[in-house]
Each structure stands twice: as C-alpha cells, then as structure tokens.
Length: 151
Length: 359
Image (cartoon, rainbow over all chains, first blue to last red; front, side, top):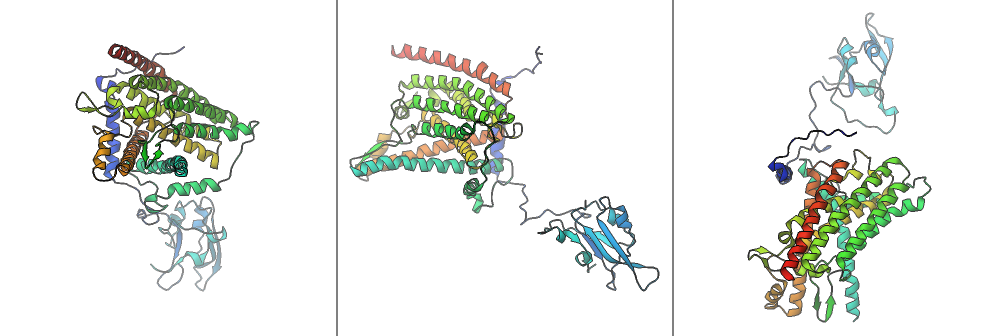
C-alpha cells in the first residue's frame, strides 16, 4: 500500500524553474571567479599546528649526551608496543642509558603518549610527516636516526 | 577526378579526427570546468594546465590490464561496448557540419554521408545503443551492472518517446527530413527582429528536447544508472581498460551527437543570425575570386557550427556540475507525466497550425 506524502506546494518561482537557473548562475560565477582553495602539494604544504605529532626525535643536552635515561616509561605506555629499549649502565650510579632504542614507525599510531610519558623531555615529536622508504627495515628508527643534535 | 575522390575520402576522415579530438578533450574540459565551478583546480600536472591529461588517460587505458569476467556470455560481454560505440558514431555520420560548396569543379560535401532522411537515420541508430547497454549489463554477470543496465535501458527507452515526438514536431515545422535543408531553412528573420531559429519557432519543443537529450546521454541530472556513489559504476563496473574507454567515448560521442542535433534543429545550424550564407559569399567575392570566396565562407560557417556545438556542450558540462541527480522514480515520472503529454500536445498544436496556415 502506498502512502501519499504531503508535498509542499510549488510556487510560481518553482514552476518557472527559477531556482534551477539561480543554481546555474552560482556555478557560473564560481567558474568565472577563477579562485581555488587547493593546496598544491608538494610545492605548497599546509602549515602544521604547533604540537603536531610527526616523526620522533631523541634530544641531547648541552654536553652532547642523550637525555634518555632508559626508564621504559615510553615503552610501557605505548599502545601498539612499538618502542623497544635495551638499557645499559653508565659511570653515574643513578642514571642509565639506552644501549639500543628502536621505534617501529610502521606500528606507531603517532598518538603522542610516549612524549607525554617521558619524564626528562628526551623524546619529542617533530613536524616531519612525509617520510618514505623503500623497505620496511628503513622505517624502524634507532638511535642514530632519531638523535636530534640541535635544541 | 582523382582529387574529387580524395576530397570525398578526406573530409570524413578530418571529421572523424575532429570528433575524436573533441571526445578526448571533452573529458578534460569537463574535469577542468567542474573543478573551477567547485573552486578547486582540476588536472594540472600533465602538461601546462593539464592539457595533456587526455593523452595520459589514453596511455593508461592502453597499458591497463584487460579483465574479462568469468561468465557464460563472454562474447556478448566483449561486444556490448562495441555496439554502443558503433551505434553512436554511425549516427554521427549523418550530421552535416557546414555549407557544401564546389571549389574549382570539385564538390566538397560538408558531411560524411549526404542522406536525404538524415533525421530518421540518426534516430534509428541512437536507438540501437540501448542493445549495448542491456547486453553489457546482463553479460557482466554481477548484480550492480545488471541493476544499472536495467535502469539505464528503462530510462533511455522512456526518453526516446518525447525525443522522437519533439523531432516529429521539428520535421513538421521544417517539412523535410534532410538535416542540411533544416539548417538552411533557419536563415532570415522572424517577426522582423528575431532570427528564424528553431528555438524561437518552437520554444516548448526546445525545452523538451534538451531534457530528453540529457536523459538519453545518461548525463546528470539523469545519470542514476551510472552514478558512481550508488551503483559503483552501473553497467560500467566490470569493464576495464579499452572496453571502458570505448564506453566512455561512446557517452561523449552521444553528447556530441545530441549537441549537434540541438544546433541543427534549434540554433540555426551553421548560419550566422540575420546574415544569409549567400550574402557572405558575395561579400567575400568582391575581394577574392568566387571559388575562394565559397571556400572561405564554408570554413567560416564550419567555425560557427563548431562554436555553437561547443556552447551546447558547455551547457551540458555546466548542468552536470550544478544539479543533484533525480531518483529513478522521479526520472520516470518526469518522462511519462510531464514530457510526453507536453510534447504530444505541442505536436497536435503544431500540426493544427501548419494545416491552418498552408491548407
């Protein structure tokens, strides 16, 4: 059984298809206006917001030593468990150092919890988002690739 | 003598080349115009302003993997795009595109075939395209193409009715089936100040024809059978590379055919408004020899025809990027409840007026 739905009454303007022509005039204006909102990557890039979560970096202090103390906070909080750390002893009896520190970027969700968890500000996330590689091994970041000497 | 045959062969080949170029670049124009209408930039990587994009598409189609689905009707599946393609391009053969003239004893016919019943020829062959749609959808062996093909067949067949009625109105108005004569009858003025174009003689038929031509070519706002969001691609879904390219070219060829018919029936063909072709020839003949005057006039009038067809094609593209599409039942009710009664009444009125004026 069909139910007749009450349709709104069509006025004179509708019967003369005025709205159709208004629509066509709008698109014509846009066509002749010759503007566009396209950001043409890679020549132009969108400016990222201040705390953008890109590729990670390990910072160093003024003496050139890695700030990372291998406390495992980042590895513990990481949801996909992509951070692997092997710690080693240093001369200072209170501090450790990472012997190897690997972040598997293929599993990383770029959530930023590791940066929040780091107690000494060793791990940060940069603005780098368009990194590519030709093999899976290249995207497993170790200390050499992560070390960021400035700042 | 030999030159005459070279001309008889050469003009259709040039026409074919021009039509294929227009088909290829229509896809580019559609993408670019659509992009600007949506305040974005269209293709701009393949060559300056993306002009080489159709060539890049052609290369892609050549190298793409040609998939043949595993159905029982492989022959039909492969042949269906060819049916649509052949039907559309054979119908294009009957379109005249300029003033035929003679140049130093050589007859140059500005059409591929000079058919005295050109209107019937075009209508007949564009009706054959339905076979290709239905067979292609059925032989694809999956449900989305089948749905799309059935809807498309219903749509095309339904809109053939107001299309043919409108063409009957125009044939009654011009009293001939010959497309060249129909174009030539649109010289001169009407009521003293309007050019004697079909759009002023028969405005209702013009509107009905435009609506039916959009529906015949499966263009938005009537493109439910092939819309990309609902039916994947309608009956195009299972076709890849060259077969898809043929369907693509057939759709644009159908658009060009419909635009050509609109220009010939309603927009004065290749004639300039208010100026007769013979007065252009005599104007040129005052400066250059008579043969060359005819040649120059014919080229000029071909240019006029080309510009008019391009204007109608632009309206097609403009409408495509402006309107949402009709639901299928709305589409059918527009055809049978609006266009068919209007065109029938218009046909009766036209017949009555012509009988009263000339009986």
